Length: 61
Image (cartoon, rainbow, N blue to C red; front, side, top):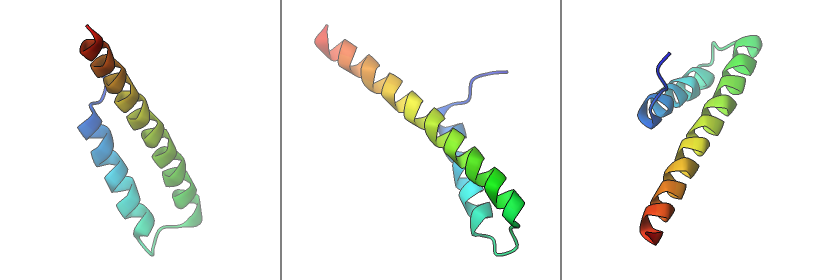
């Protein structure tokens, strides 16, 4: 499976957030969505940290 881009992950997170705002979202689904949101947030944070490290390294060369 190809690694998802920042934009792919952000789009999925936005979709999760929209689903969580749906008044018809059940508790079990909300918990699953919340867990997915946390995982997506961690992946996004990792991508941003990697990009920041790369930029820092490039700036120091």
